[in-house]
Image (cartoon, helix red, strand yellow):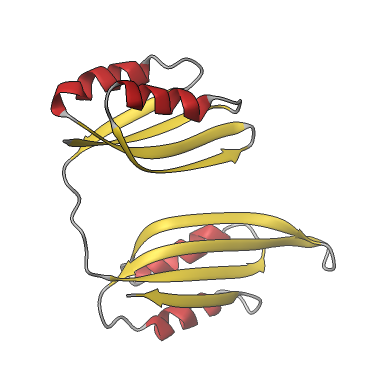
Length: 168
């Protein structure tokens, strides 16, 4: 079996995921996992599919032919399972230009790999401004000092609330 990572983007409308799922099913692919989001009127996401080598190219061709969607697929080798500890980092603070760059820069300083990252802004009615919220899952080596990471995040701004939870 070959693993394919498929990314999609299209103007949001009902039936996009169904069209993708039907295409994968028709070519005997096994849907392993996915993540989708709606942003600014667009629907986007990615899927991991396992498919036989015999059906791989016909699935790729069929994916490329789906109307109203931009589709890219990449065949990947087997992924190495890491024994690293995973940390979940929740961040909340006043929104400001550059906040994502500041957060990712801290992670880069510690040479950490982002596994997932989701962020959004929401209204803070009592304050009259936007609140930025982010959640990231990161891989860290065993024995990593998450206290130092928390201090580095909190030094970015005095209103930043950071919660770090380990998943071993």
